[in-house]
Image (cartoon, rainbow, N blue to C red; front, top):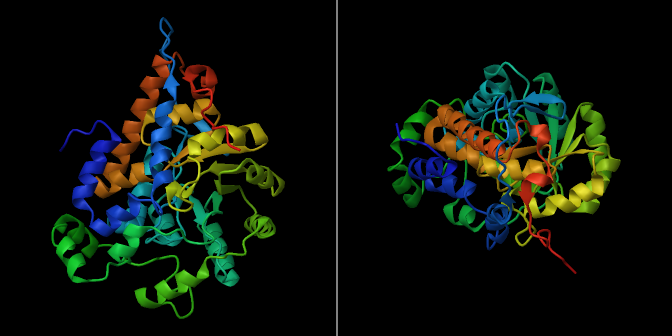
Length: 387
């Protein structure tokens, strides 16, 4: 068993074990990947204030996200194709999250279905919804999430049109993989992954195949999906979905203060400052740089979370000290999942927790609710003076 001390250790193992197309799917952004890179690098501009001679006993990272108790201010973000990173990936990630005490969010584009994850877990998880042109399918999807006792609906707003990701096109990304000469050559070197997939519960999009008329295999699924993202999504439609759901709603993909204000008007319970991990609008501002202006715009009127760029417990600390009530991790848990399955996700969570706990203590804080801007050194022009 290798010694894992940081998320980067898991990433190296993940790269060796996952098929290239699925590694590239996770570890890439759109177009030039500028936003993808800056989501991570912009955290480096923020420094922490070390404090000494402070009682550091009795520390706790426990807090709440949308009223739900969490072991630390972290939720597992919705990631499509998670079940291709590792056999039954969504189930394994959900189990790890449940045992650790943080929320798991299932993607609409998951391999394991809502029902699969509900059957394999004992506590409610969150469900992420992509709005589709097929409104009947969307309504049935919402009802399935209700039937599975999902405790929150996360509506993704920034995927009305798919951003181009060069690597996915060049790799011929599909689930399951299409057996081209280059794919076969790569899969031949990933025997551990292949053996796991032989026993996988599913190898296609479990929330869609069998639930849409005429979609029964990878071929017609691809054609259906390509046409289904709804370019007409607006705030009126979001309000109707919220009403149909009838429970807590989190709006994901907010990167502008004006959109944050609109989220308030439709009654969002929380918003996630996110640029889809740099996978949509390349050249957009990083999530951590967008956070201050959004907090200024909405104050404490709605719970603000942050997604995109979290790779360490110090990143979590910085986001929370800036004012976020919680953070979402995507790639960080996928690295662990692809490296070592459920145990890898648990390892990733433990790594992040230890970094958060120790860094918080060295900043002279013992509880999450004690974190504020006073523990940070933020450049004066961090948010940017844009014209």
